[in-house]
Image 1 (spheres, rainbow, N blue to C red):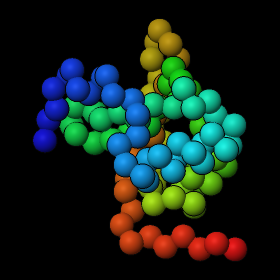
Image 2: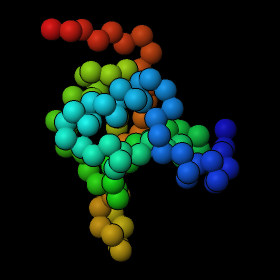
Image 3: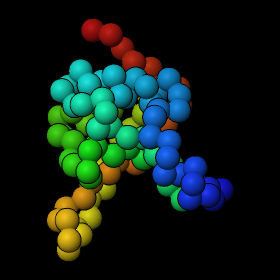
Length: 101
């Protein structure tokens, strides 16, 4: 399903409780709430962006992946004008059980 450009670029908020939990977990790890953006790509898939294409620490990614029903997979590209850019593909994990220890 392809989305129109207008709806793709304006909504940067989580769309469901799993994405809201990811936002909460990242804020708990020290990231700024206003810098975390949830977007839908032109291909219809969801992704997360931190600030202006900034990386998220691997320990923090592992924390989110361990404590949520979402898997974040990091993507990195090099842009000649801006350097490295990072974003994180969102994959919902169905039927994942989170254990509290």
